[in-house]
Image 1 (cartoon, helix red, strand yellow):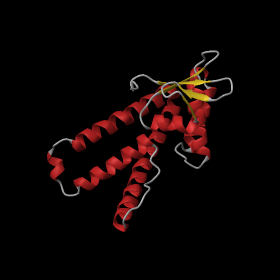
Image 2 (cartoon, helix red, strand yellow):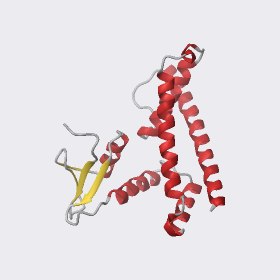
Image 3 (cartoon, one colour):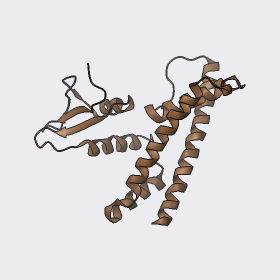
Image 4 (tube, helix red, strand yellow):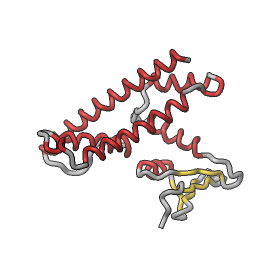
Length: 189
């Protein structure tokens, strides 16, 4: 059985094919994206030179998703990223992004713990609906959620549409706050 605490080692052969060392088979970029969505860390190395290629392949996965219209990064964030490459040493952007994503993961985990814990709020009217929205939002943020598939009743479809709209509003608010923080950081530089 695989050890999920260690990164999944993927080797790139001279033919540019990617080889999963745990399952002894070839994988695609989409397979690697799936491993990551499932919470697995990956490490991609060149078989011959031993160079770590993980960053380059992760950027390629992001670029492919963005080119298919799965836009997660707003244009102003992309512009800020490009600008950060022009600053000697990268400026504050790498640390800011790492801290922002760490904080997002931590806050989402705490929010889910609080929502699931036995507390007086669970008796509030509408608590279950709020909890369902938060779970959908967590799925969207951590699993590349792009919508539900499969057969649903019309009531389920309506509920899903409402949850998606609410999650979209929450995501827009987070993006707005991130943009504000980036503007403030730019002014500090």
